[in-house]
Image (cartoon, rainbow, N blue to C red):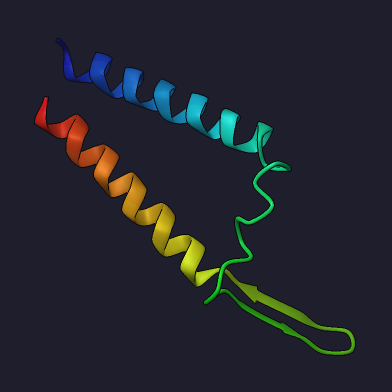
Length: 71
């Protein structure tokens, strides 16, 4: 298969996964509220850094890309 074709198919899969993720976003209320996510609230300032959520998403995406690369 042409490398450009593979890239377009992979991008399509990523866009579909992102669409499903945003559609189900309201039902995934635990996402972004895991232990280890940093949230600092002051009077008129809020700082939010979801470090644990970012690590989990990174691990899941890494496993998916490793599995796709082997085929």
